[in-house]
Length: 89
Image (tube, rainbow, N blue to C red; front, side):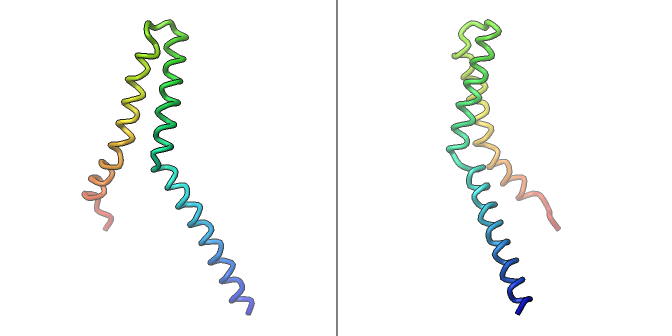
């Protein structure tokens, strides 16, 4: 009886962990996260360029923000290619 209860507890803990992992993965791959990162990158670079006196800081901040966005969009594709050639055996 105690072994059965212990097994149920362990299975429940595993299921809860799996739910957390799935949520984390969903967040990591979400467009919401990517858009927020692009916005924060743009703002951080814009404020930095403004602080150091670069001409047109907010226009120049677009380049790194767009580059970051492109890198986040291409990484999943590159990962699939890498996994295709990666031998786990």
